[in-house]
Length: 235
Image (tube, rainbow, N blue to C red; front, side):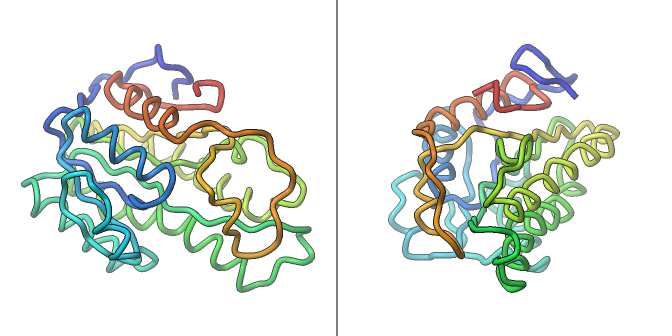
């Protein structure tokens, strides 16, 4: 897989007119992506758990309140995107939760929620989408810099994200036969507010993060340029 904005696949995908399913649309990165995708002319289906927050978004697009933590909900999101635009070109998964603290102190319930949301949702959404997309489609998962180097106090959260990166590496090879690109994005710490809303524990001292808008621009540029991997150094 490539590792920079100069790397391109055989089928780059301009976003103007593209049918894009954006999961986690009300989050920090998700909301920034929605704005940037709209600016580039994408046709959006916006998915999040909170119907009220979805309705508050000003970006045009179909709003679909869904909890994606089941395969049935992931399939419903895909069907909504196809119904809205007649096809599905791009799936972007910006869903995520975090927890902090020593590994020995993290409860089994927290572990399950971390892996269900951070790992299972991307896998189930890809399963629902990959056979409904045509050549030139793209699936984007945001594993984050933690997938490159895990940190003490974030071991289980980091493991849930590293699993996504590993999944993306293999899925990219499988999906290549159908000319569908899989893009693993690993932005550095980003100021989304997620660290202030952990499932458990308290965030360690973190450096000032990137603006979500910068991350959104980088991901959209990667989609339009045919990039096949977005390591932390690309941001």
